[in-house]
Length: 215
Image (tube, rainbow, N blue to C red):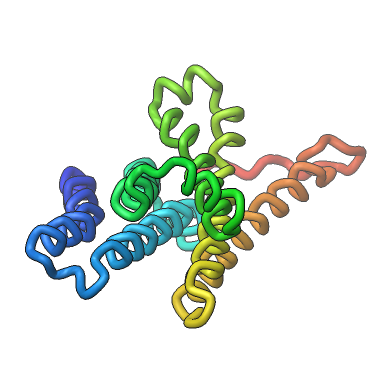
């Protein structure tokens, strides 16, 4: 695939579920309960995009595939946009902007509370997604901030599990995927920490071998 075509194709694929939702809503094809169907679809795709945004780093570290890194920002922004639409659908279509009821829901229904918390965590990540913010915060601080995406994904999975209650097949698939990606991330962090503490990298008394010739 030509490098120039990667982002437009990815954008079209990421946008397709939202276009289909809009088309189905406009033509009355959201089933017997269109409000619940729209809410469920937006929630599903939010978690899908959020999970996909965790893939680029393990893909590069494990498989040596670097092109997904170029799509990470776009996927993350789609996750935030879809999450915001999910909440807006609940706010306006499901609850008709009854702010008192919404506040009670967030306080009393734990699946709504954790879903709202996940969305709140995504806000600073979306705001600071630009190169300008990377320079402004410094790469290390920016990277630490964006590790919140893992917590947002875990909260999203928990939201899904508590939401469906009975049929846990899809939530458990997401839980497995997010768990594996998080485990891979922790494994790489641990490996880097061990390497940095080794005598050869930390500057101990061990005799170091001569540097290998450049290839």
